[in-house]
Length: 329
Image 1: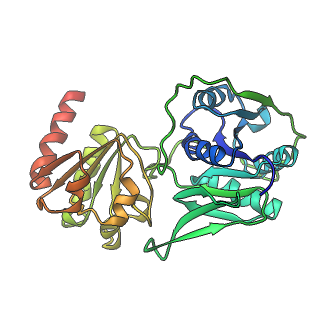
Image 2: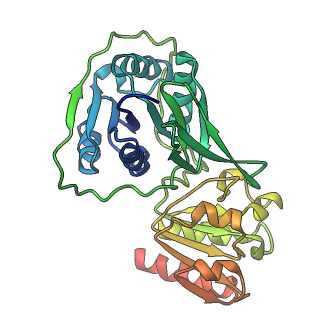
Image 3: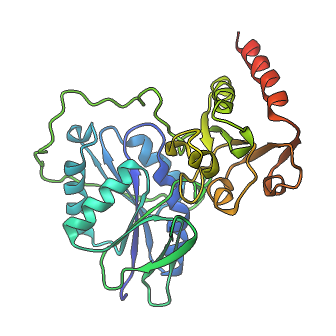
């Protein structure tokens, strides 16, 4: 691709967890390799927090829409705003986090612009020709495919949350240029009496979890997840699972961690009765601290764990749960 390239990363507007900030890490690498610029794109209402966070992570530019019309996320309205921004600024690529919002926006934008889309990627690199190479798992995670959208402008892709680390929030370079945009008002065809932001009871947010307590085949039965739920609740975390536990029907696929499930990067990951197959490790190796509990000291999980606890999880976890409950009382 000819000319100076501008890599865009989508940052969720408003307050809360901005998973798109993780994409500043590969975005900076790509911009450096292509001798281009890195731009954060923010749309929403009251987006100053997101702008400040993106600025602290070292982007070159920030393109922002801050308008009451974008108080609540509506896919068609946000897509139309993004389309207008793309046609005004002509970025060479747009990267989204592969969360629910990012997947939806990326698909809708690629359809409107009639360009290709690489979904659910685990790596993004620059080719010698200047095109981006998107790597994503196929065949239930048993193989990897590399996709290139030659000739597309912009190139659009989604990257699994947790694959890349968010840059440290300190940057001693020049402050980014902030471009505040106004776009024509778009009348959404969607109508909703109420938009509920909170997770429904039982819904899982593994990508956003700070602590995950995960179980595998070593639990012995579905009943073992009752103990893990108690531990997760006491720690203020979420329950994860290996593919083996999901395939056995002990817990729903929404809890699965790994190449065919969720990619996570919590501060603490407690693996209970999980041997540590390569596909599972690929989905949680970015965790800050990994604790493994298993009766078999030879499992691969012990090789990647920061703390390896050899023993029966049914002897180890119950006292821990009780101690945590007493501490909270």
